[in-house]
Length: 340
Ligand SMILES: NC(=O)c1ccc[n+]([C@@H]2O[C@H](COP(=O)([O-])OP(=O)(O)OC[C@H]3O[C@@H](n4cnc5c(N)ncnc54)[C@H](O)[C@@H]3O)[C@@H](O)[C@H]2O)c1
Image (tube, rainbow, N blue to C red; front, side, top):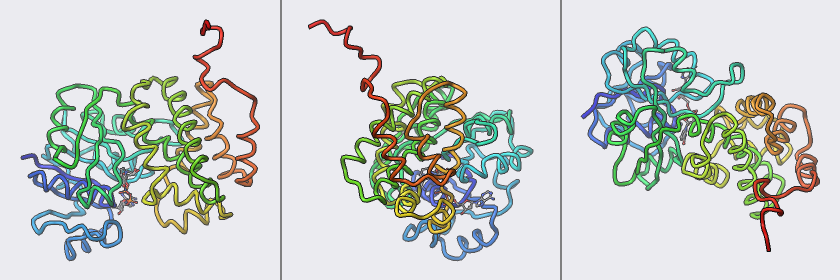
């Protein structure tokens, strides 16, 4: 049994707290919001973020960060990506040398273009940082529906330790050393999910969705590989796997925001309506800057940026994608390599 604190009490933090408790660990949940802690202590359920998932009586809820961090075996960092740096900065004085932090949020910081684990490493250099990612909507994990996910860590020992901590018969955990690839897949799929939502909002069909998912993962992999991620990772659970679920599911806030934008809402109106942090909006700008830095083409993500930030009409963005220069499907498969 491990002593674990979940830092951040939103949908995902709450679902993981419930899962880890079921796995036999001692679990503390921290939130910056005192009223959220009061509500969790009283209700033993997060009625706004994860209704229907009961949390046990002996789970500890606290707004005291020092108490939540000091001496724990594992810290699960589950705050939405815009709060990763500020939360890590608050935590750093309490984190011991070699203490394990598992970041489960998904995003790229717009200003620094760093992934979230890189931010945590920058803020808390004494920590051992790992990540957990894959197709895993909190609403389904909270209900115990089966899924598969990946722990990424630089060393195998940490990865295997965390695999044992999180894994159970409905939550199958693989391990991988490609931390960067995992994080880029998780962050960039939110931008493509906005595009998938926009296509739904415009009234397009399943063919359009399949095209966006397939060409979307091509862009994600192209950028991710240029940055040092591995092709195999983008073909796996944290790449195409997470992209499929995010583009298809109504649990995805990025897709829901996209649907509204496709129906004519502005980005601000859509964010207000969804009432949650739409992380793809932040990652979209970062992805564009990264593509410029690494000189790779990401036409779908470019058009998402134009719709979000330049007021481009969504239908016009789709048209532009359709009439781009004619290309090979895969530039690695040139005709002169195929001898008939
Ligand atoms: N929800 C999911 O299904 C899911 C699944 C996998 C990964 N994720 C990732 O996990 C991360 C968290 O997602 P979520 O769905 O739990 O988000 P959420 O919107 O439910 O999180 C809101 C919570 O963030 C915390 N918070 C609010 N303001 C804060 C601040 N200023 N500083 C620190 N904490 C603050 C509070 O506990 C609040 O309840 C995201 O990066 C998301 O992409 C989510």
